[in-house]
Length: 377
Image 1 (cartoon, rainbow, N blue to C red):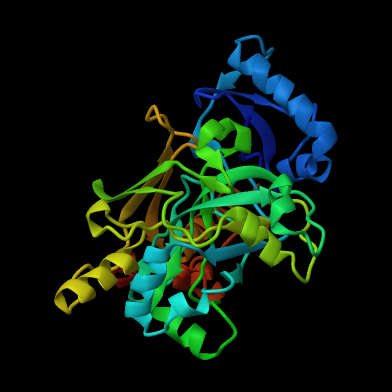
Image 2 (image 1 turned 180 degrees about the vertical axis):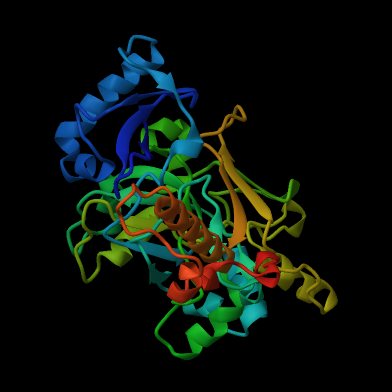
């Protein structure tokens, strides 16, 4: 089945069941109000959601409506934890060239995994506000799974039983901040802003034969500003599958229902197939010609990431995002607030205190107006 979370003004959104063709949906609040609530009692709730999914696909559901990915939050708008690995040989090799760190040797025996921020995920069609272009803005196309409760010490052979959902990911990175993060030997932090997820999460059985041995054999396409940047198979050339990754993550801790685990940036050893991240393209350019020519993203740049089944149909719905300036957003928001405050003061009923000429300047409101220089950010 396919599940999504609609915006409803709350932090965790409203759970909906989405048709297989991604055209219609049905609110699931009579079964579970949020996806996290469904994950907390999966064995009881999942069959009810699956029954609604069958009715929706058969045209028998009571209140279907047109599905709009732009109205979606991330399937899990916030999660108990977000763990991301690096399991693709091509990515490890190229990033070795880019950073000078032998990631290949480091992952010979066990996977590389870091813990990212999980309190503020982005929806698939949300703009991506970032503070500085100079930070090296980069996208990363990935596949991730959502787990149920995974007991500490779970072995590889049993780990896949705990996979509840599969998702598409854009793991945003700020490449120029990464080296300083790594120097501190405490892992990635400032270089990893909010992560985005495809609008729809699917159960593994929805992938049919494409879900095999802890891999999702789906074709992932990446377009940057409308130009194809990569077309890759998410199951090829990996060092570890999700079974090994889950077992590794649960070696010394329990994983709570709703934990998200990514396999890392999808990659191929064949550069002709393109790339799922700009950093790899730059590394390949260094390997081939000695100089990285491809620049990182600029404000206004767009990225589209989609995963297709064997018939060429979108599985999760596409991630379509535009990079924006977080500074400009703050300035515009401040200007809007000032305009609202001024309007309220002008419209105040007779007898109430109203704004006097120059009051905005005295209160500092005018200082929040963007300057022409700011507006160009």
